[in-house]
Length: 196
Ligand SMILES: [Zn+2]
Image (tube, rainbow, N blue to C red; front, side, top):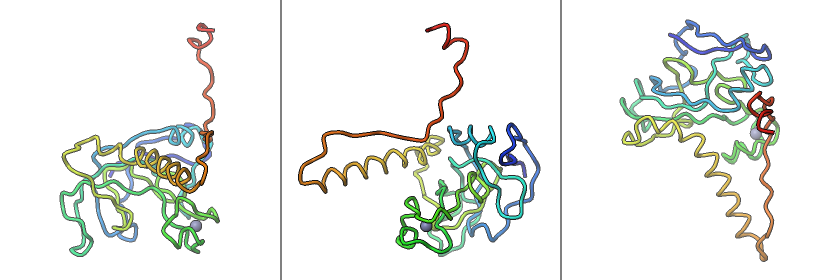
């Protein structure tokens, strides 16, 4: 099958490659990819600033914003052939730390988590991928290709949920909010310079 791969730490190493089908140990659900989103993290990985191939491999299959259609699923998995799913990007660390043990792997404390298409796990930028039922989210087929926006939307929803919880916890609601993120400014273009 075809897959978009990169060699971590090597700028602009992106290739459309023929790779073996995903092995069974990568998850009980086999999925046909319908759409793939691209974000700033992908940009950084392609530029060689970030990314980690699976253990024992030189290259990483790129892509973490997914939408796919189930091709094979065990009967007791909660998923059926034809279901539309989105893969959860991050997986708990193997130790696990207290956060991962509680199912809050977004808050992993020891940094040993893995992430599809980013850190130590192949991504969804391939014709097919496999995923564990615990890390698959069913989406309404009526959404069509817009289902690919579920992952980035979940980031916003989580930020809002945390903001809301902090707000409720305080006897006196906080009056200031700092929004921060590890965003690296892109180099200025000629058009930017002309505008100055
Ligand atoms: Zn952890």
